[in-house]
Structures are given as C-alpha cells and as structure tokens.
Length: 234
Image 1: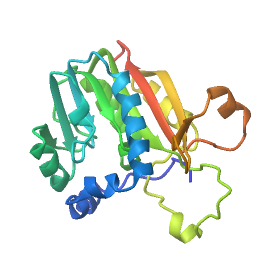
Image 2 (image 1 turned 120 degrees about the horizontal axis):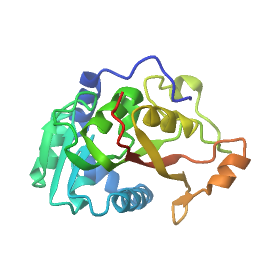
Image 3 (image 1 turned 90 degrees about the vertical axis):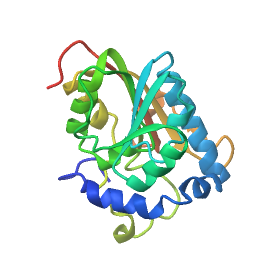
C-alpha cells in the first residue's frame, strides 16, 4: 500500500494494542534469530547516525531496547503505551508518556531524535516532522526507520482483506518521507534502503542507483538520516 492515508490511527487505540502485548514483548522478538539480527543491524545504523549527541530523545521508545544502547549522557523516551513505558523505566531509563504530535519539551532541546521501530507508521508525517524540528537544535539529527509499503516479492501474497492496513504510514517511495521532512526544515543527509532476506545476513542494503533503475520497490526497510536546518519549522 502507499504511505498516503486520510488520518493516522487514534493514539488511544495504538496505546491499547501495545499495552496488551507489553509483558514478554522483548522475549517474543528475541526468540526469532532472524528478526533479532535484523533489529541489531538497524540499531547500528541508527546509533551510528547520532554519534556524539549529548541529549537524545526517542519517539515510540517502547520497552527501551534501542534507547538503552544510546551512550549520550542525557536521554529520554516517549511513548503512548503506559505498559511499554513500565518496562523501559525498569531499565533505568527516563521516560514520559506523550504523543509524538505534541511533545512536552522545550524548543531546541535535543541534539538528536530517534524514531525507530517504524514508529512513524502510526503518525501524521507532517505534524510529527514539525514537532521533531521544533525540539531539535539547528544541526541536530533525526533518524527515522520505516517499513516499506509495496516491497516486491515472488512469494504468494495474502488476500487483500488480510494485508490491508490503511491506517498505517508505510511509504512506497523515499519522497514520501523526504518531502514532508524538508517542509519542516529537515534535510536528508543519508538514506539507507534495506531488504529483509531469509538467510544470513538477513538484511541487505540496496544501492540508490539500483533503487532508481528498477521500477519495482525492492526495499522493505528504510533508514533516513535528517538534519535540522536553521530555518524554523512551519
């Protein structure tokens, strides 16, 4: 599906879903070695992009698995799910229950913002990018991980009724991220297109020239590194 849809899901519905699955969440994901290896690869890309940051915010921090790996002296996570935040707090992390469309932080507070684990699928990109730009210092970085919306595959596809999730933002084109980010004053400095595969290394990076040359969407994961310009958010 395209990343375009009428409105993001209600944060209360998202919170309820993740509250229900919070207990045992990390254990379930770690049990699949392929999923765990893919997550570790994505973590490394995101963490490398914010190296040297002193104050880091993570949107949709969940249980705090990624935030716990951040080496910045000051770090804080937000999420709409109280159940997930309970587990993040148990790791000793500073957390706040908040909607990424209305962050409870002062302007220009953070050197870096992480938006991993596909959290933007639940957000309105324009509003969320505006908020990220607002809380970032000029020159600060936002790192966004997203799932692809129309990844080409030779596997038999599930019936449309099973795979249709019109409430999720899953881009079918890089411009669906870059354009609203640029409108908020966030310029792309790096774009990683990655595809899940069934054998090691489980995640391959696809060069930009291949992405441009092949009409089908080959990537299933996108990691975009954005930098805050001196211009104010819209």
